[in-house]
Image (tube, rainbow, N blue to C red):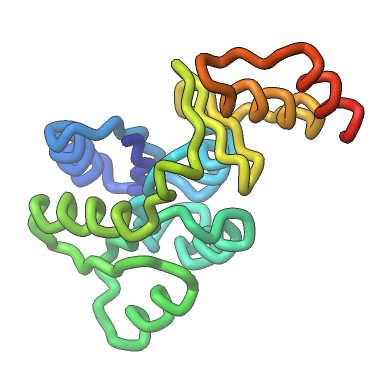
Length: 181
């Protein structure tokens, strides 16, 4: 599982990244909203751990923008903002969980795991083959966790091939599928 950690405090980010990696996850760290936007646009993450106080903007704005594009990505807010109104605003903006600093690393790990379980796509709806992972419902293809754009026609052919037993598709079946496109 690959997690994007968006935290502007380098010391805290280092501690979190080390702990999450020890839990068995790959972690990419960015320190700003702009860096987070770029990373989210290019890599398929399974979760986002997001600080609200970023140097170039508010994490809530980033969260709202993300939710318009990807409503299913588990997002956990990790912030010092502890007032009830702030917690409610974060959850209403689309966060799956709201953690208040300071927080135990074990709790962060457990809450990320729980959010990912709730958001998990049933295995039957994901097609995997080697380094490829195709989610037909959203027409999203990732290779080694990196989102790869693919035209609709090529996506349809890839899905047909990945669904085939032993990855074999007879020429007439492929021709029929292409002619119906």
